[in-house]
Image (spheres, rainbow, N blue to C red):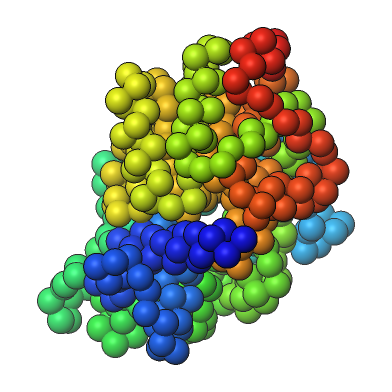
Amino acid sequence: MATDSWALAVDEQEAAAESLSNLHLKEEKIRPDANGAVVKTNANEEKTDEEEKEDRAAQSLLNKLIRSNLVDNTNQVEVLQRDPNSPLYSVKSFEELRLKPQLLQGVYAMGFNRPSKIQENALPLMLAEPSQNLIAQSQSGTGKTAAFVLAMLSQVEPANRYPQCLCLSPTYELALQTGKVIEQMGKFYPELKLAYAVRGNKLERGQKISEQIVIGTPGTVLDWCSKLKFIDPKKIKVFVLDEADVMIATQGHQDQSIRIQRMLPRNCQMLLFSATFEDSVWKFAQKVVPDPNIIKLKREEETLDTIKQYYVLCSNRDEKFQALCNLYGAITIAQAMIFCHTRKTASWLAAELSKEGHQVALLSGEMMVEQRAAVIERFRKGKEKVLVTTNVCARGIDVEQVSVVINFDLPVDKDGNPDNETYLHRIGRTGRFGKRGLAVNMVDSKHSMSILSRIQEHFNKKIERLDTDDLDEIEKIAN
Ligand SMILES: Nc1ncnc2c1ncn2[C@@H]1O[C@H](COP(=O)(O)OP(=O)(O)OP(=O)(O)O)[C@@H](O)[C@H]1O
């Protein structure tokens, strides 16, 4: 028991160290020492929180970099109109929107055949005359960015050489991603120009910006609008606040956004987008978007109904590895994701699996977001058959095409309690769209057995024991 709790403490410390060094955005600020330990002073704890928040921006960027399609969602869109008596429009095709031909061409060139679920309602609302304000929430990947980019491009007058659309993003990297979508969708508008209001983009004093669309982070946009006067905020027609949930998690961004919003003309269209809608986001949204229409698309429910769940009892790491090899020896596994608690275990496991002849990809905490995206991309293309990753690193990643998930270590939160949400997200996605998924949990201590029991209780689903030395039994689970 004493050994268990000691092992847990070491693991937790490592995981904490990882969640810190994970973040290249603030890398220089705090780092674990040479032993991977984090020194906990009050000041550092505060920073840890900050870093944790900034991790949301990194996760959001990672999701954008690895995504190539819309995320499926069969839920109904909920629309709350400002004027409940006005008819509610929804469109099933882009033609119905009567877009300018160059823009429709841009949309089709991007390979979009029809509006996504959220776009069906959001687009007619955003393009209506007179202009209407909108607060929209739907999970990442459902087409929000494409929607507001289309709204900005529809309203911009390319002949007018001054900023008319202003879009706020939480980070420089996220601003660049949105900028790319603007460039792609607006590619048949050669006269249309885009400026990035981000730190490091220095302009000469007294200069006025001629680009029609400005995208940037709140601090720099505020400077450009007020102190430096590069932008005349009174000429802005469309104001977009993207990733509001990430925005409010970053210190100072909320106030800066509100100050920018106050400089805009009253009839400027205000649009706010968020992947989540907790109370704090909602309060902020109401402050920056007066008289809003509201559109919400609930997250698709993940269930464990179509997933076969097992656990394997082992007494240490080597036995877990042996059990994994037995599994691989007995059944055909096209592609699997394996989750470990610490970076050290993940690296060790990846090396051992490689020695066994597997093609292994490793997603590790010290990688930059772009490097992680490249690893996931290769795995998606099937270049590697096994992806070994740590819990922290894989948070929020979609594993849709993978039908086998191995929890080499069970997911636990900062306090060592079962992380049910992560368990569901990780495993729930393997059994989507009628596919049958397989999840195997490795259990190697009383502590992890108790975590497993609590996970079972939480979902009210039995996780069967699997004896990986019994080949017949393993073969059975594959059928
Ligand atoms: N109508 C559409 N048809 C096909 N693909 C689309 C459509 N709209 C968007 N996409 C694509 O789907 C993916 C997700 O879209 P988008 O980035 O707009 O979602 P999002 O909700 O803004 O996600 P995030 O919150 O992560 O920014 C992108 O690859 C985008 O090109």
